[in-house]
Length: 434
Image (cartoon, rainbow, N blue to C red; front, side, top):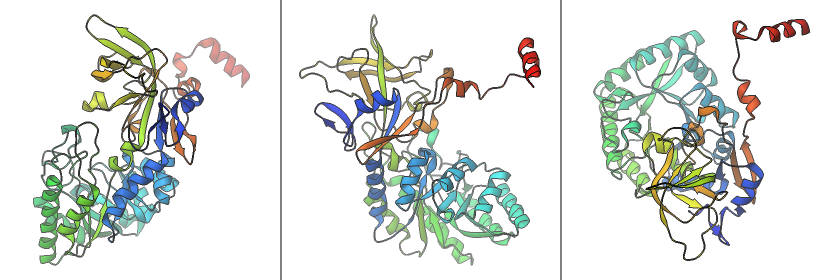
């Protein structure tokens, strides 16, 4: 599978813990993360910049489990957050506020208020209305908000259209042609301290380092232009976007990325921040599912598993590829044949793979979907009133449930029936008991 999930004695392990052992204790489906894998991926990225030490703000949206955040906090990471909930998660996990950046195009007044009160490192402002609103809030607090102007550089990240963020037609950032005026306004407004610029062109970028270089060079030229008119630019937030290998991709190596950053910004005397997400967590996660039925149709073989699109939506939403492997290696000489791996939801789009070459599988067999540490559990839902699946972390030869599977009672308790729809007898009994 990969370095974090090896086969040992014919059985898939998480580090050195048998996955069948975890499945027996937790039940399927479940998400599984390798703590050693998370740490290795973080060091692979952060150490690429040595001797420089950029502020590495992990993009919480990729995987917001508190245990994952605590692990990164202990490694020295900051956080890139895009909601009040993510900000509260980062703080609860022990990430210092001075290492937190708040991004996002639609921050509410309440979110800006909380961010300002928390004293975070920086708010990445994405529009003039947001800038003016933040100025008013800062004035009410008698405080000063550190901000960066997020620039839209009009660069195609060569990624899936649904995760592109750096082109003119995308909703993110202030048009680069308007950035000088926006930065000047930020300097003039009360309660605002502009400290730099920010950019993020998209996730799982294609085209190697080319799109990054184009965006970074435009940002560097803007820094020079701002300084020429007497404005102070002390930092750049370069966003995230480095991809991982799901199928046939060849994402840039973090060392090459770091050399590019140094080559573009090394002479500008700016502090560097970056917001890696997927590249830090994607390869360190599996979704483990059980085969419910194997259905041989007239023209296709269907392997029906107990995980569904509500648990992992990426294949349905992005046409994403995830490798699927048996937890137990097949017998030597087993013949591979095409199969559709699908879930139980009553929609054709509830499919993880089409015509995928797989060994023979029987009811009760376990399979694992790879590279789901990012945008897996965090995007799951209770569609079809299916319970959220648990998340499990392996580390130091043991495993722990880091988000439990809720009960049906807990799920139903989230809803409330209004008085006018309640059963009259039940209302009478409740009033009598009161």
